[in-house]
Image 1: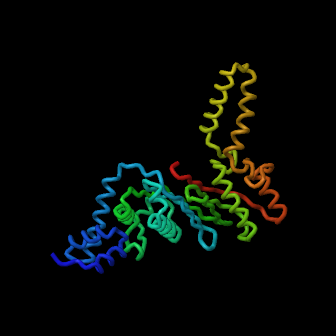
Image 2: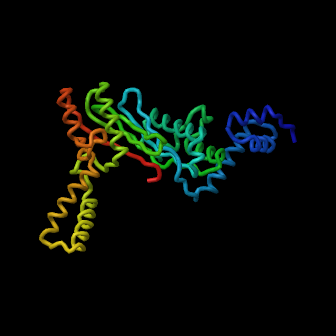
Image 3: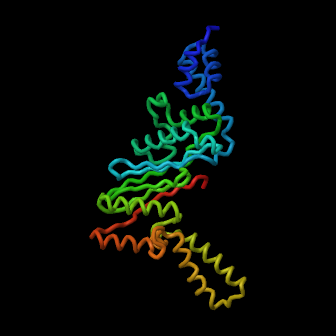
Length: 288
């Protein structure tokens, strides 16, 4: 067996980020051939990924990326097993690389992302193979759980990530790409992250959600001995409160609890002579 130099081990370590002992073993197995050693480590990562496939990966990060023109945004959730790994530079750097690649390629789903190459920084590996390599490197299951994409046709996209990178959102609004609109859009993105609406406006709340809430309130009213003739009025009042919780436009604005989001948009439109409409949003919270 050829003698493996410390320089070669360090070179492999620099290329792969894998521990020194594993690099030494890989070079031993490859007879000192650097490329074969890299392939050995990749196969080891794939084997470990298969071994850990059944494990739960509930930690990780939520990443948001908006392009320079502010008309395209992506949001993704990348998972690992422990918070220790989630806070490490290797994991967060990988998540950032995947996010940037998704933004540049206009990728709109996890399935479409898996075959995309991450470029020279990851030896041209596809995201799917790079995840296996990262599993081998970090010793934990790595999973790209969710990936969302929004493109604004007549407006802009803004995003927000809460400190800690476990909660984030992107939102699409109509309006000119001015600094004032950008600030407002970012406030709306923060609102979405913090208040967790499920839809923009009341008319789009799924019918099954409404029926489920009505039934809950009906059973509560009846269990409290409320007369049947008053139950429908009680339900109507409680449903208004429900809509104020889950409908973005009807929520209290996080920067002024005395105003609803729809009031903030109307006031902005009057002040700047510009119609602002929230068209869509995506919100991810780690582990949901």
